[in-house]
Amino acid sequence: MRKVAANYICLPGKPLVKNGYVVLKEGMPVEVVDTGGVVTEIAGLEFYGGMLVADYICGKEECFAAGEPLADVLGRLYGEGGRVCGIAIIEGADLRRLEWKAGARVRKL
Image (tube, helix red, strand yellow):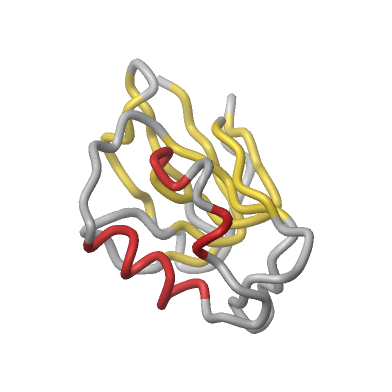
């Protein structure tokens, strides 16, 4: 089992979590853990700066516009459906405002 933490987690069908982590089994997310906003040291926990999202968001950066709320775009993309086969990270977004920023990117983990 792999544990991956980030500043935010936004996966389909799950609430937005700040400073939580995702438990992966064979690359698939099986659990989202809400730490109450405080990530502590856990053996084997990997931390990434950004927002963890479903892997099928990779390659869809053209759907995001600078200044657009991440929740709006992710809601649309998740609403279109897709099979979650793993997770990806949005890096370079404005995490204080939870908005897409020019130069941000999505990469599969």
